[in-house]
Image (cartoon, rainbow, N blue to C red; front, top):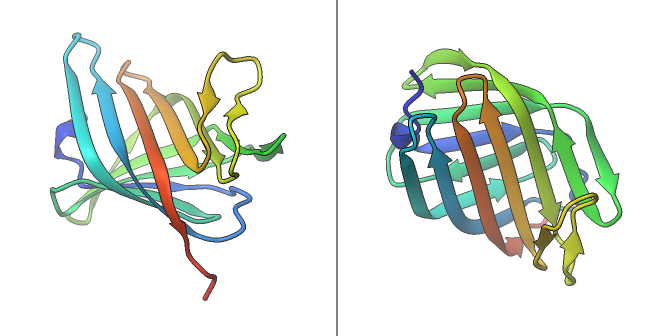
Length: 150
């Protein structure tokens, strides 16, 4: 069974339409099917057009989400669907996703997600992932800076 509590680095690959790579600080909340919840505050998040990485205090573990179906919805960057792989010190394990969305608001104004009551504050990102086993993962972060492209 996937133990999110041991994830150190969460990598989400996507085709976000970001103008520049971003850095953010945030929170990861994991709700397990048995009702247990785990919170990981003060995670470091890095995001580019291809990758969204969330790093906690542990090392050696990578959760990689290769996303598809990315598009611009108003001023929000949105991706949904994809594949999920847990990499533990080089040993990879595929994790089936039932549903996944990543929203990025890198504007200076609040943006409401279409057909939702959720509004993203300026310079924030949010990912919601539901695995086939019923584990729900929420990632939210406040963008600290936009990095110039190399």
